[in-house]
Figure (cartoon, rainbow, N blue to C red):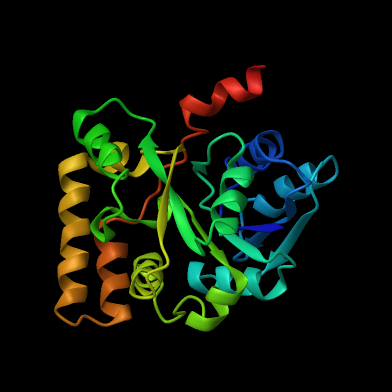
Amino acid sequence: MISIIIPVFNEAQRIAPILRYLMRAGDAARISEIIVVDGHSTDGTRKRAEEVMAHSTIPLRILSSEKGRARQMNMGASKANGTILYFLHVDSYPPIHFDRHITTAVQAGNEAGCFRMRFDSKHPWLQLAGWLTRFNWRACRGGDQSIFVTRSLFDAIGGYEEEYIIYEDIIFINQLYREKQFTVLPYWLITSARLYREKGIATLQYHFYMIYLKKALGASPEELYNYYCKHIKSQDLDKTPMAVQAIFDK
């Protein structure tokens, strides 16, 4: 059984659409629960999630946590009932039958992995970046692709490193690769390009590269976060990725 864990902070416009989508795209026979871990949002995110919970076809739990995605995901994992943990960003939409694909992969001996990823944008650079996610190369990985991992492997690694406010997904994925326990499933997840639209593709990609370089040169978690806040942190509030909107129109 899968426990889906979604960390959120001030995502009132996005939380209900992703929850409704997961209930249509997945099956309660394989999904133990959906756990929304809220970092004390101030925009009504929790209320929106509770409205969905009242009509949920899959058990839905809403937890409160200190803000910080690593802390929130670790808390969600500590409360999860499933033997498979599935970490998902609020603006990333996994493929239909994602739960079946994940359980099939785990039964085949793959203890961790992700999906291929497409952006909800036709920009050539973003299309290329998405196309490259089909390869099982560590350089092509990121948290936007979502991450599934068995409970036993998650516990063995020790979860996410909570001192990192950003970059925590990359560190965790690197640990999974070191354990030689990572696969890329041949199905497409769709994620929002909202940050690229807000900041500009070249500008944002430059700042991402700078963060990678700073980490490689030994920058502290605080230094990385300060750089992120100065150059990247988003104020954008766009809506559900257009590519998945058809799901709700059926």
